[in-house]
Image (cartoon, rainbow, N blue to C red):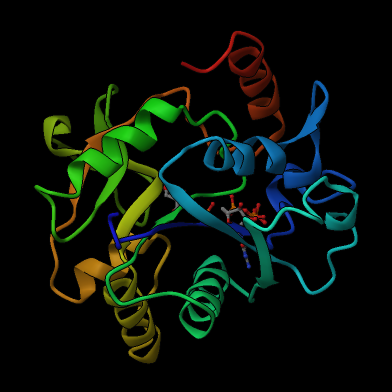
Length: 234
Ligand SMILES: Nc1ccn([C@@H]2O[C@H](COP(=O)(O)OP(=O)(O)OP(=O)(O)O)[C@@H](O)[C@H]2O)c(=O)n1
Ligand SMILES: C[C@](O)(CO)[C@H](O)COP(=O)(O)O
């Protein structure tokens, strides 16, 4: 049996300020399920995912309503002020429980419910050729402009070299935890796991994702996600 287990970490401790909704956006419903359930279920349905650790806000009063109370593969911990703090807390939880040095972890935003199982497979497949880990990403399809402080165009950037990072992001558990802890200690801004790995000198691979794998951030994203989810995510 392959001793290298794959954990999923779902940062779900945000407040969704940009959504301007009455409840944290991860608990908004699309059809019959919350956004968070879509994200968690994608990993529970995948045979190669060992367990799912969800980082929740200390003020979360919605989690108890979700159907995971008796599921031994779904664990929770308390998130932090920023997304990176929530991820760090989940990694610490794994290491302090049954995480092993040889394990890997897939970090996925709760706010990205339109993830396909095929893309989880692709990330796992990338493991052999990407020892520094990998992230799903999509190439820029618009012309990319770099702005200056006057919000005028400084220059056009070669869009063939521009990729928009998504999640899941997939890394060796111990390496990622150390990279994030170091980056935070150095006061680095860490908005995704790959940036912490880059700061530590690694070069994660870019695995092609999908433009369906949107991050639900503002109101208009809800309609788009509901269309993708109602048509089934391949
Ligand atoms: N302290 C935080 C902040 C964010 N997240 C999670 O990180 C993911 C991506 O973050 P984002 O889309 O920015 O969510 P929010 O921070 O909730 O949104 P906003 O910035 O609009 O408040 C979300 O699933 C969110 O729940 C988290 O676990 N802990
Ligand atoms: C992790 C991420 O989804 C990659 O694009 C993104 O950085 C999250 O940013 P947010 O501001 O925390 O939503």
